[in-house]
Structure formats: C-alpha cells, structure tokens
Length: 271
Image (cartoon, rainbow, N blue to C red; front, top):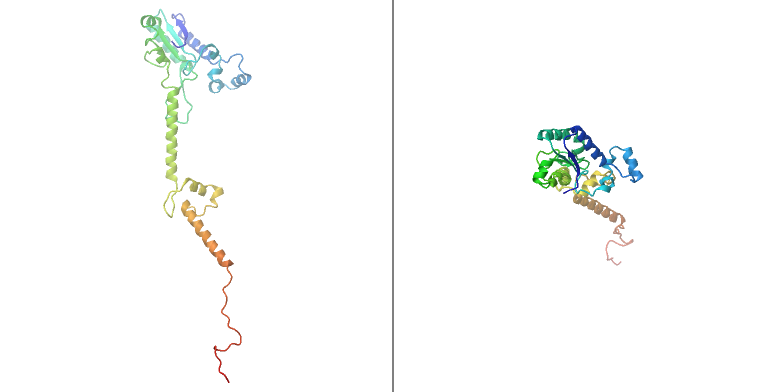
C-alpha cells in the first residue's frame, strides 16, 4: 500500500472539523524544516507564492519524515468512516469536497497554450481518498473501495491516487501544442516570404534578412530580387567597372605620320 496519512472518523466530529484537519495537513505539507537555509526562509516570508512556485518538495519538512510518493502533490490523506450511516458519510464527503476544495483540488497549469492544455496541476494539492471501515473489512484495502475527492466512482487505492490528467498529460499536451504553434508560425512565415520580381524564386532566409535588417539593407541592392539575381547584378556591375578601368589605363594608339621632305611618290624623274 502507498504511504497514507490516515483519519478514522466515527462521525463524532462535525464535517467542518474534518475540513479544518484537511487544512492543517495541507499546511504541514508546506512547512520548511527548522534547519532550512536562511535564503529559502527569507524568500518564503517575503513572497506568499514562493512555497508554491520556488521551493521544491525535496526542501520541505515532510520529506524528512516520509519518502517520495512517486506522484504529484503532498502526502495522501485517507478518511475512513466507521460505525455510521451512508447518509452521514455522503454528507461529510460533500462538505469536504465543497469547503475543502482549496486544499485537495488541482489547479490550472500556467501555460501559453490554455486552450490546448486540459491537464491539471496537482503539485500543491493533498490527494484525499475516502472509504468506510465496513468496505475495507468486506473487500480488503486493495479492492475498488476508495473514492477520491473530485471523482464519482470508487477505485483501487493506487488508481485513486494516480493522476491521469496530471503532470504526464501536461508534458504531452504542452509539447504537442508547442510543436503545432511552431509549425503554424513557420507556415505563416512562408506565406509572407517574398518572391523574386525577376525570376520568381522565393527568397532564402539569408536574402530575406539582408533586405530587412537596417545594417545590411543599405548594401542589399535591388530589394525586389532574390540572392542569385542580386549576385548577377553585382557581377555585371563589377565586370563593367573593370572594363572601364582597363580602357582608362590603356595607352593611346600610334598616329599615321608621313616622313618630311618626301615627294609625292617613291620615284623621281632625273634632270
């Protein structure tokens, strides 16, 4: 059997007294040991939510007393009703569920994907199960005689303490929602990706960044063309500049000059 905190009730106490007991168990599960480090103590004193969000279960007093349960939440608590009627048991359980909800009920996870994540956070809740002594005597503690607060059917103890809608489901839903969001952002990005006005090809990530980032945009040239077309433009400009440089550096061609004193032809008439 899992480790349980156990309350045997013969219905000699008011149901609201049981809620007060549940509250004290919840508070005990949140206590720090006396030798807790000063930083943790100061943090808990300064921030009401610190014990929930910043102080793990391994730093709490209860881990000095009981081993880990292997499940989310504080130490499980069982109310076993004895020597009473079903009506009185039902009434007490109804009060526990309603007035004690703050202590046993899971919370919503703080997530970016509220619509996609239906899992519940049991990390700060006391798992509370109820049964009767008569059921235990008749069927045994390993039978489906336990009902967990917030559920409607009786289960075995291990099933009642498990959280099928808890941390494991949260991690799966969160991962799936994150992957879907990433794919959606990628699709939206592809829909916005510009195409080359000259050849029609989609811009690469590098070219897209080059034309949009200020420090590179001034050197991007014609921002309507893709990277290869831009490279062609640059190559043509460089070739034209090199040709002009070579023309400017070339010496002038020699002129066609005649020798002075020469006659009109190669032969002269003798006198």
